[in-house]
Length: 144
Image 1 (cartoon, rainbow, N blue to C red):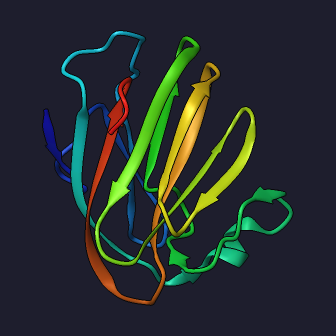
Image 2 (image 1 turned 90 degrees about the vertical axis):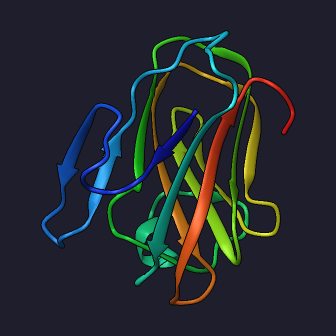
């Protein structure tokens, strides 16, 4: 499944941020979802240093780059996942995720995999430089 990411193309609902950007509230996913993987394509322009976004959040992993103040996506997981792989692909991207188990940042290999607890996850797709970049974000219960 491919989904275009923009303020007009939604999975469930768009929350317009006061700075003029948008964040998408993704449709909840459950274990054994179909199709697998779910793929979202979009474009990001990082303007805010990740250090400002992360102040006081106790991030796990080195986190340098730029994103938007508000998360790119909000992902509700109503149930635990024994294994879930979240991966972002594109040139010079950073993945930042805040959820029930803390805040995680991935730069070199922007993906998070393993057990995910039920809860709402804030997902920022960012850039290492202040550039506009296309990305492909995917969710899978298999190794990608």
